[in-house]
Image 1 (cartoon, rainbow, N blue to C red):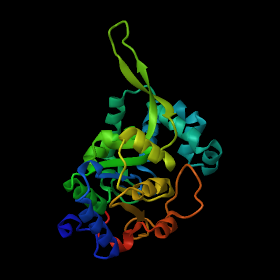
Image 2: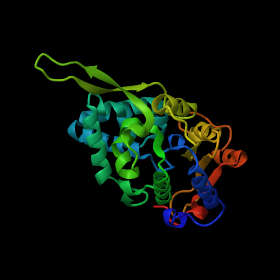
Image 3: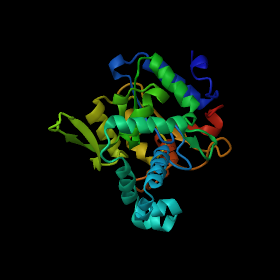
Length: 303
């Protein structure tokens, strides 16, 4: 069965563990068949920069063309010049708020349209291919295998919820309501005197904390209400989610993607963005007995 379902997974211990989980999961009640996948670095490429950051920078370029005076804004000036010292001094939080401000006041539908437009035309500079084609083929095959087993598939990302929701159905077959991420706050605008509205408008504020670490587990419970028995990630920001999945009763699988293929992708040890990690995540994975996927050795094809 899995020879047809997982053609890009090479024979070996890693594939054996994935196959064993799929076979065991067939005996789990359907309502308990939940799988949560991180996005950046787990379902699609995150180097040399995050896809959502590329989207923000593309929007900044468009905004600067329309209003060159925006280049005087310190955050944009630092980004345009590539001044890493200035970017570091300003801080990622301030940079993120400035970029988010490019979309302030937009409706959810307007933001979604922009995200889909970018994904339709954007190219990955490092890999010289359309951005929408930097998804990992073996993970798409795993999603399809889980779908055949009636799993509820979810994307649990540190990135923006609305950005990933705009493309999750098209890229992964995951409906937008099954995306859990860092959430931007909206302002409800009541019906105006001229009959326009009501509407929702984006702000630059987050609802709660960035979706990394233990926050991922909290958001899985509060937004999905179901515990995964499979969790896949690639960085320390996914650790608690993988631990949570493997603490479930019955069959479970923690899948950690190790980026060790400099020839076909990039070679690096993934790390969380919002907090420091005392131990490399690959060391954690081996110590805790997770299924650590070597891109170089376990995948015959990456994209």
